[in-house]
Amino acid sequence: MALAVSLLFDGATTAAVEALWQRLAEAGISTSMLDLGYSPHVTLTVVQDETLADELQSKLQRRAWGGVLDVEIGPVGRFDGTDVVWLGCSGHRLRAMQRDVCSLVSHDDIEPHYRPESWIPHLTLQTSGDAAAGWALADHIWPTQTRAKATVVELVRFRPVVPLWRAEFRTTP
Image (cartoon, rainbow, N blue to C red):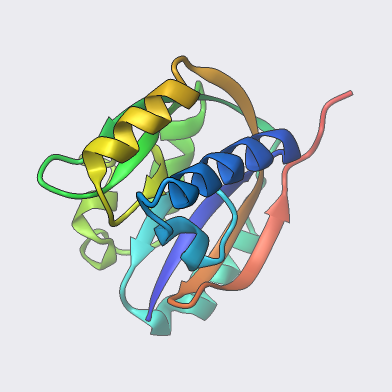
């Protein structure tokens, strides 16, 4: 099993992405994200060494997470040579937060695609299935960038996904 630190979204964004996952399933394209059984998220880092869970949780708990994180979600993308289709994510503090989370563990413990120098911020729509059809459907449903709010940071063990720790970001009046 591995560990991941993820950002979770506000209710409206979560519902919209889950509806897109459902459309992919209904079209017979992919059920992979529904099958995962976890909320729509952006993974900040992945560590394969499960024995680091307590240490990572302790370090995460000592962080001052600040306010809700504004994120732009979209457009649709795909990792070349894979069935992975995703929505790109960007935001003023997103990369800085990812670098900060990665600094909590040894660089060598981080999965290569999740190291700061190679990380592509994204919200996964499918990990298996017909990528061309998934991309086309997602692009039709989510054609432009949409504003969202990341409201929670969470440490999980996966597969299956088991939340180990979470912190909610402060909301500003």
